[in-house]
Image (cartoon, helix red, strand yellow):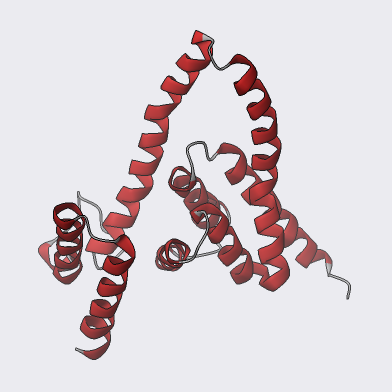
Length: 198
């Protein structure tokens, strides 16, 4: 089966977008969130913010790194099964190449002070990437519209049910050191009941 020119271009865009995400997602899956968000929402408009949040939620619940899972889900949404394969390959290709090169140099030169300095310098940048993506998801979770900002919000824009569920989940996780999977299942069931039944 031959692909049309437009389909090939979409697959190339998918590969290149997730190649960039895989190349620059230093610090793991959560650090990739703002990169995924920019490519998927701003550059290509493949998903809405609500769909993006759903993809992240599903990516959290399925085994594997979040960026890899997200690439598979986004690829499926944009171009079906072949899109998921292309996006996934795009996401893992730079990691495979870079990790092989870095592993060699790290074990050979890991005691050099310049290498330790580079690693210490990257840590704050990774934390800021995670915080930025987390803030975007938090704002979508607690407000009824993705267009609301701190500067133009009204009390009617606040989703008090989501804030309550968020506070309870954080409390249970921090106070009782609960299993995150059980907390996610419990909040999912609560969401079905509150938003689906009531």
